[in-house]
Image (cartoon, rainbow, N blue to C red):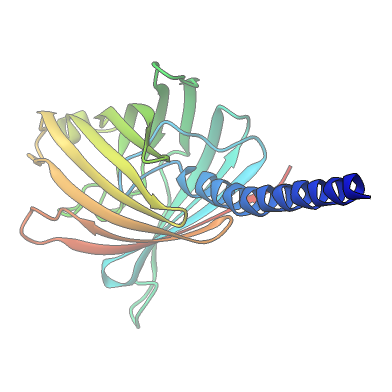
Length: 256
């Protein structure tokens, strides 16, 4: 009889232990899933990272800048290493002035050359031009990066959270005399399962070009509102004396 009681106690104890492990596993798995969703991105504030969309993923992003302007980017993952898209710049979307639309000169494109590993970063080659036919180079960097780029991204694990470092080269192949050649660098710091701090330096001049632009420092805060929906508040050119504020909204769905 005593043996039966001891056996029953052991069974109850084991059951409680399994329940506790399950209760711990579920929220930890959920946090890991949310974190993975949050840190998976294809750019920071202005600069790109080396990540691409997965095959069949469709991304829609909206960059809201000064005077009611919006740059809408739509991208499609053709494979896990290649995605293409179309940037559409619309000025005066918000307000009472006539809306002006700037069609892109080319599709934007990103090709991942290496997926990286523990010691080797991911490396991608891409092209982006959100400026379209009108006002290709404005005084402010509110519409994002323009030109052909090579970027490397390396994940870093710190305090059990995954962060990333990116570094790259940018060249204005459309009009090199204006845009020149420059470097850029940035970090994505995951401060929680739903919040990432973005810091970047762009336009570090190697050849300034006729625009004679210097480096700019950008800062952003990215929030995960839902599994595939993000919202970012960003400041452009903080050290330039006349910083601009933009809002970025990103959404991703599976289409095939």
